[in-house]
Length: 75
Image 1 (cartoon, rainbow, N blue to C red):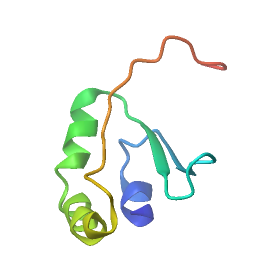
Image 2 (tube, helix red, strand yellow; image 1 turned 60 degrees about the vertical axis):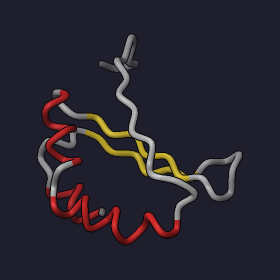
Image 3 (spheres, helix red, strand yellow; image 1 turned 45 degrees about the vertical axis):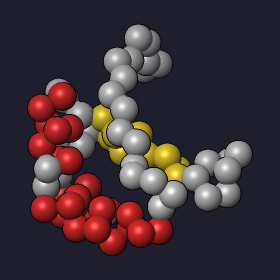
Image 4 (cartoon, rainbow, N blue to C red; image 1 turned 60 degrees about the horizontal axis):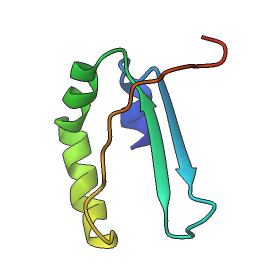
């Protein structure tokens, strides 16, 4: 995913993290300029290929949540 994310101008920020409380957990935070950009990425052929590769390794489908920042330091 890193090359796809790096080349996607709509990704303003991306954090790929291991869960400190769950050795099997991975959490990614992504920042987009708008909701349409985030939805477009989820429909990208590269993301679909990623899902085909990783879903057999996961306990369930990835959970995708949308959040609205209420305060950001430095913004």
